[in-house]
Amino acid sequence: MDDRGVLALLRSRRACRRRRYGNNAAARNRTAVRHAHQHANARVRGLIRFAGEKGAMLTMKKVKIGVIGAGSISDIHLGSYSRNPEVTIYAICDLNGERAKQKAAVYGAEHTYTDYRELLADPAIDAVSICTWNNSHAEISIAAVEAGKHVLVEKPLCKTVEEALRVEHAVKKSGKVLQVGFVRRYGSNTDILNRFIEAGELGDIYYAKATCLRRLGNPGGWFADKERSGGGPLIDLGVHIIDLCWYLMGKPKVKSISGNTYNKLGNRANINNLSFYKASDYDSSKNTVEDLANAMIRFKNGASLMVDVSFTLHAKQDEITVKIFGDKGGAEIEPGLFIVTEKHDTILNVTPQVDQLAFDFTNGFQNEINHFIDSCLGRQETRSPVEDGLEVMKMLCGIYESAALGKEIQFG
Ligand SMILES: NC(=O)c1ccc[n+]([C@@H]2O[C@H](COP(=O)([O-])OP(=O)(O)OC[C@H]3O[C@@H](n4cnc5c(N)ncnc54)[C@H](O)[C@@H]3O)[C@@H](O)[C@H]2O)c1
Image (tube, rainbow, N blue to C red; front, side, top):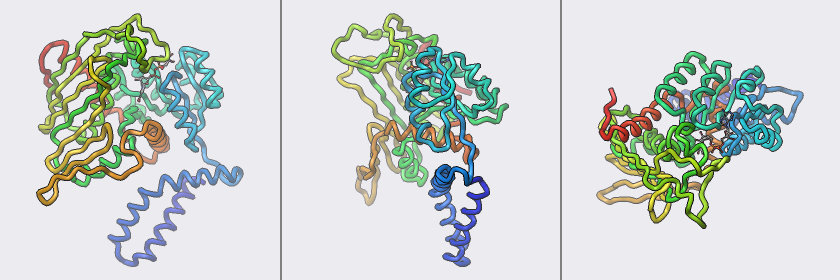
């Protein structure tokens, strides 16, 4: 089924609504908009599946994907691509050739590479996921859009604001899609909360507070090497919760930042009998990143965000909490969705009755990947564009800069 077929189907739905609502244009339009939102993607996917089943009847070109970086996170990208009927997993690249071949065998990719430039030179590839160390995100993103590929780049966008500006420039010049892997934006709990926010139920959001504390969890390897990662828990974990708050707050402009970082405990590789997440090439011999960071971010609209993150800390247990507060209501999205409001002079604590109150890793990534493919096919603008990656880099780098200077820094 091609685009014309889909349009014909949407036209027939319109005719049906006209019969049902007669001349009541407003009711017709409201229903049309709701139906378009609810059904367009599902119908298109269904039709493509149908076309696939009927094989000879109709053909739709699939999006050919290359995945660069075949470590831990690549598995969830590859798994999500493999469940999207509009995708062919075509090539995998890793500095470690064996790792690339292993993943190619599991996910059925025809081609493997150890040099991303060779992968990008293949004109058959439409889009790439970049799942490499942070120090190569900018370089590979720029090369990919210049080679005419759409890009899904894992968080953080890159290591510095200067790099982020160069990526933004290349993306704008190329006209290609670059989606930043701010996966928390694609959680079903985020979607639900956003509907409450957009309906004004929280009112003016003026404060957010986010915590992601690991008592033991420096992943070692490249994560602990500032050259390759750009930093420790702040750039690795803080990026998610800062972005989530900022996104839910309506993406206000930053006014000033006051941050602190601490290197007090090292990586605590001495600890026995307690397991934790490790890089694919775990190595505890080098650790040049902070173990704790905290910050207060002030925005130009008067709102503020308080954040703290750690790879290790003498805390009783790991903790993740993300809360936002408005003048009509508040909400928690981590550890689970929760809404606080006031009605008839009474405070209400509301637990939404939904399948997933917490962030669901598998579904979140599937939504992110499906959204990326829909964006590559021109059906919508991406929800996490390069400009947002740049703004988040300004906040992360601002915290590091403030901590290094020992004072608050101002933004123009
Ligand atoms: N969205 C999330 O929740 C999430 C979770 C984990 C990691 N990540 C991000 O994903 C990226 C990868 O993290 P990971 O946990 O998979 O790390 P990892 O160490 O498990 O894997 C990284 C892989 O990239 C390869 N690599 C590095 N530079 C390369 C290059 N220039 N060309 C080809 N291959 C290269 C390495 O050989 C390694 O196999 C990081 O940017 C990280 O921040 C995101």
